[in-house]
Each structure stands twice: as structure tokens, then as C-alpha cells.
Image 1 (cartoon, rainbow, N blue to C red):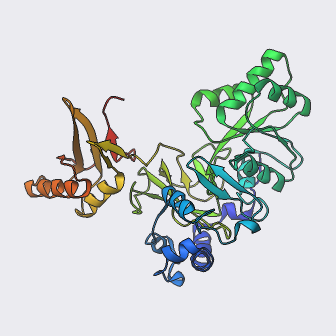
Image 2 (cartoon, helix red, strand yellow):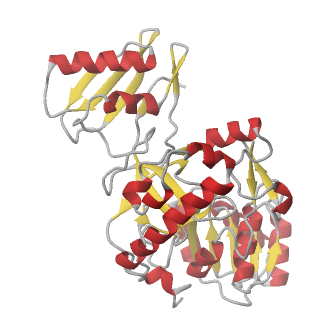
Image 3 (tube, helix red, strand yellow):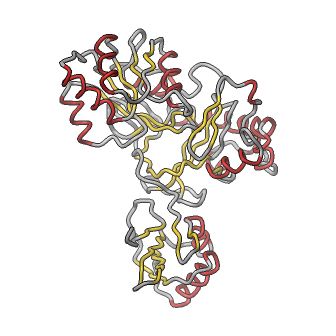
Length: 410
């Protein structure tokens, strides 16, 4: 594999930030003018002033739960699109339920970039095992392949033996699907005595890409790389041949924030992934994915210069029910906002004999009884539940993005 998809992948940080200074105010202005939901959410925002990441970080976060609620109250798409349903190419439905519009244009979810990084080139056949019904995954990969000039076999999921027989006959170069299903197809082909040697590439997403799977594909001489995306946003980040983290797509802006807030964390600290997508049809701004990740320092050895993340590291939406009341990361974040200057916090939920027990562990440079009392008051004020405060040394809590740790037996 040589070359990059376009020159944008190797831009300097200065050039990339200059582009953001132009794109961000345009995006905010467009969303306010054309998407009714953002006209309300951003009513007091001066779009011309949103020219960098710091200014963007002052805007409200949009959560998936807000999309679901908006779509229920203002069907079909909750006012987050800039065009009516009748002007859209397709609309999809994912569990939630939540409905996603297909943006207009060539490769609207931008997966051509990720497939190109995997090694797919013009004329090579893609064996696409993502679903083509209800959810947009199948079309996402198909549109990306077609933008590269590649034919697509729309296989969809399931029917392992039939998949293997079709691959043996059609001789695809690249598989697209979940990480483990490719292994199932290859093993089915082996059992049937089929020649599947044409499959030298794989692009996987939608599941855990475990080291054992990587080793299995490598032993067969295959290059199988992964990407991270969502039905709402399309491609967010992708792996290159360097295999050192996932490189953020050129058409999104990614932030890592403390779960339950919109507050950025330091480079390397685990937090929730927020994504802003520069999509004229569906301009999601500071969209909370609910996923945890962290920024990797430096740039990729492959020459692509955009930010890199470690990949999927768990879920940020860690709500738990305690004594009949839901406790959420946002409430822990509110407690900490009342007490600036402290480090990480983690609410540990356990059982004391037969009763739920909460312990808020807080990194603090000082041991102060008045601080303990103040934290306890804030915790009860925001959660309406009493809890114990445990002050620990700075850096004592793990860097894993976990805000609520429910240790009770399942």
C-alpha cells in the first residue's frame, strides 16, 4: 500500500487549523439557519465567533438521547436536518429507536478514505457483509467503495456457507464487515475445500477487533484494518498500515471530554468522544457518542498528520440505579464543578450488607474536613442520595474514563 487518499491527510497542523477557522463559523451559521433544532440550541451563539476548538468547546453537547426525544416530539428527524425528508436519498432506523438520514452527495459517510487506507483500489471487488436493511452500515461501505471506483457484492450478514461459495466464485479482493464474521467465512471455505485466496484485504468495524483475530488474519497473509464510526456520524477514525491507533477523518472534528460534561481532558487521558461533522445535510455539532477513548501523542508513521485516538475503550454512559434513583456521570461532574482545582472523581457503588452504598473517591492535593463535608453536601444535592467521601492522592484513580463504578453483583 502506497500513497494517501488526498493531500488533506498530510496537512500541517497550522494548515488544518486555518481550515477550521473558516469551516466552523460556516457550519454553525448553516445549522442555525437551516436546522430548526440547532436554531433553538444555538440561539444565543454568535456563529462568527466560533473559529477554533476553544470556542467550539463552549457550545452545548448534543446527546443521542436528545435526538431520540426530538424525533419522538418532532417526527421524523427531530429538526436536526437541513432538508426535509422528501429531499433525502434514503432514511434508516437503528435501535433506540433513532432514525438517520443519508446525506446527499458522493460517499456521504466518507468511508472511501478508510477503505483506501486498508488498500482497496479501483476495480477491486468489495465483499460487503454489513446489513443493507434498516441500518445504514451496508450503504456506508458501499458508497465508499463506489467512490473509489470499486464494484460491490452486497452480501449482507449471515448465511456463512453461501458467503464462502460466493466469494470463491466472484474472487473479491476485500471483505467489509464485523471483525469476527470474516473468520467464520474463511473457516467455512476451508471446510468446504474452497479457494478464498483472493481475499487479501479486510476492513472491519462494528465489534471488538481482538489480538487473536489479528493474529489469525496475519497468519493467512491478510491485511485487515479497522475503523470507528457511527450510524449518525459516518466515519470518525480509521486505521492505517502503521497500525498505531486510529487516525481521525479529515471531515470531522473530534474532542475527548470528561464523561457527563463538555469539558476537554488532557492529551492521553481517557474520556468521552464528542464529534462535530461538517455535513451540510445533517450537521451534528459536539455529538456525544457515548464511547470512551484517548488521544495518542504525535502523528502516525504512515505520514497522515491528523489527530490519532486509541480506539474504542468502553462506554461513557455509566448510569446506575441506587436505592431506586438513577445516578449519572453528569451528576458527578456537577459535584466536581462546584469544587474546582481537584483531580479525577469516581463514584463507587457497592452493597453494605443489604443496602446500596456510594463512595465518591476524589483526587485532592489536600486533606480537609470542610472539603469532605462540602463534597458530601454537593453529592446529596445532585443525586438526592447520601454518600461517603474518600479523598485520595492526585493520580491515584485509574486513567480509564470511568466515572461510575458499579461493583454490586450482577
